[in-house]
Amino acid sequence: MKKETHPEYRFVVFEDASAEYRFLTRTTMNPDPSKNTVWEDGQTYPCVQLDISNASHPFFTGQMKIIDSAGRVERFNKRYGTRKKTVVKKEPVQK
Image 1 (tube, rainbow, N blue to C red):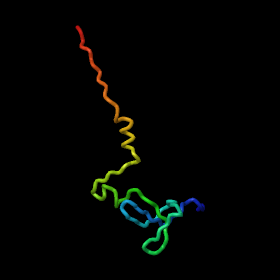
Image 2: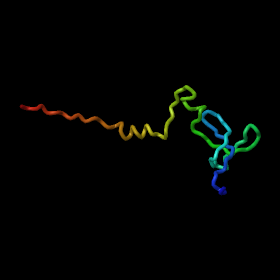
Image 3: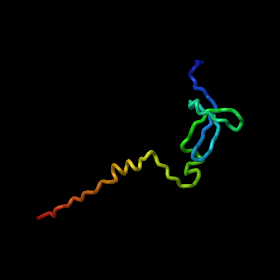
Image 4: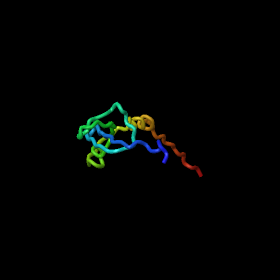
């Protein structure tokens, strides 16, 4: 087998900051080495911040949460919300 063909498979802690939920799993992801955290077993692992996980997603929690996707709604309203409909008057047909 060729060397250097497979990515490194390591333990990483994923942290959902909005729900204060963390879990340890294995991944081939290359996290930032400066962001490390100590897990429950006392060992230090790299940490990846998540925006949404199963602990904070509305589908899994059953609660409705408004999530602003970087102002996309405002951008849409800015582009298309101020347009007014133009009414075209039809002239009566003369026979």
